[in-house]
Length: 528
Image 1 (tube, one colour):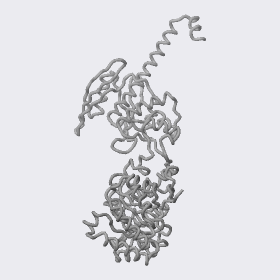
Image 2 (tube, helix red, strand yellow):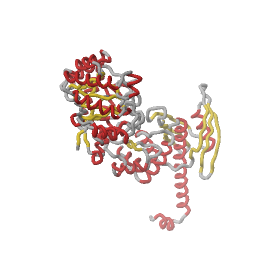
Image 3 (tube, one colour):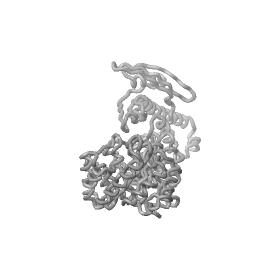
Image 4 (tube, helix red, strand yellow):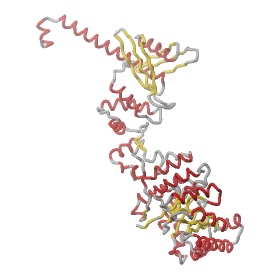
């Protein structure tokens, strides 16, 4: 396979984008991580832009020794001198000089003729080469440049001493077939192109930076300029992680490889986010928090059986510890059972079925169900009590004066019963309404409420201890609504009391039956 060199411009083009500025220490920390990532070239900054940028490039050149350290310079001798001053202590320095070649840039920005720009490019490369053995030349806006003129410029800068020639799609205008054809044309028409590494630098204005970079590689480019998380001017640059993993996942199709240590990708991505305070979008390829997350039940089932069904790369290959089965309203029983097993709970099919019903009800109310909530759900399911009374509807009104009202709808067998009551607050009013419907007023001995998880949509777990004629019973329930949790916990205690009442009636009835039979019949019936 051919090697593709990775030129990382996170600290130059990336840092130029709004919100991504870094100080010297932050840039140095990022550069060290890029070294661990094993990128081939780090473009450390634009030395003439400011004293701070100069000092950052100089410091990185001194301390980061493995990669090539490049500095950017316009085709002005003052820029080139300042760049060389910043990078000359590097073990492997590179001067990167550039000038625009498209007619729109020449006419409106540079206000120069093609011949003037050509002469300036030649002079800059020739001068840079007197200072540094590694000189890269970029034809800014090459994607919109006249092809005949572009061929002339590239041939001339190679003769002047350029070692790398970069073809930027500066404004993200090109589409993959078009950009690939441009690279192929340059390789065919520039007679001395074999003397340099052909590079590309693609922007993402149409969302095709990585696709254009891949098209360029397929047509002979062997250096790709990119950034961590795809940051950069406007819509950003080609994403390093996406390009590198495309080559790694599809080696047979692309026939190219890199020296990047992909296991450091996730760390680099999150370091950049932490340094800049700019979060990665959740669905960002490779490094987004959802990149290896699965919520749909069909997907979860497939991944749990064989990860390759829905994962074309392992999370570990980019430094993510493991994939994530997100339990939400789209999840299935298989995923729920697997999560319980990972939490140390062996559940039967019946227990899983009861827990799944409670889980789906909770998942409809919140986006993600957390492990602590799953344990509460399972506890409810394992301590299943026949629901003589079941909550169907609850509406409460409360205020800061301690007065509340509640309307409650309960199912009881085939009946639906609705009643209302008032109380010292919404929970008290709810309990009074339940008492009116069940005709089983209980004395509340203890009541507690706690949050199972964090956040505004956290699950509340209610616990009650209630005294009835049949004895004292506890009730427990959980919900994202504290009043609903309180109501269901109270009904749980009532249903336990009813079960005990029925048990006592059965025992009493059995005793009466034994007393009414003869001794011989009794022995026959009870086997004594």
